[in-house]
Amino acid sequence: MTAAIVVGLVYFLVGWLFALPTTNAIAWRYAFWAVSAIVYLAQIGYEHFVRRSSPRLLAWHAGLASAIGGFGLAVAGLVHDLLTRGTVRPLFFVALAAWPLLTGTPALVGALLAGVALRRSRTKRRQSHAPESHLQAKESDS
Image (cartoon, rainbow, N blue to C red; front, side, top):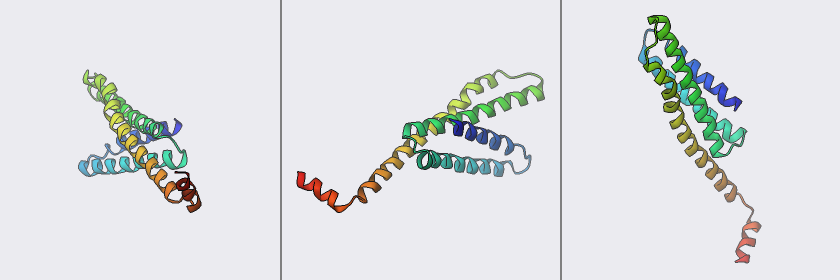
């Protein structure tokens, strides 16, 4: 859970900091997507290879991290609106719920699919390296 919070804060910071430059906005947006994709894949790899998380837990952590990042960006937008306009438009309150859902749900689904695929590849790899005597014992039982 702690890793999900840290990764969520990374998503928020990257999204916030990469939005600050006023020149080359499209390039910064692409850089944000690239860095976010690297962070996402690194989190999936960490959950699978280091923590040995189940696909469901891996997906939950990835979705939670993304939702935290989305919520942070929605709060930052709300605060920015308040500071620049002196008031908050009602749509920003919708964003507080929508952004975590819109970022967390696809991240959860993608990580679940990746976790299942990684688990299957690990199982297949393990079966292909089984000793011959073990396989012969199974065949003689049939």
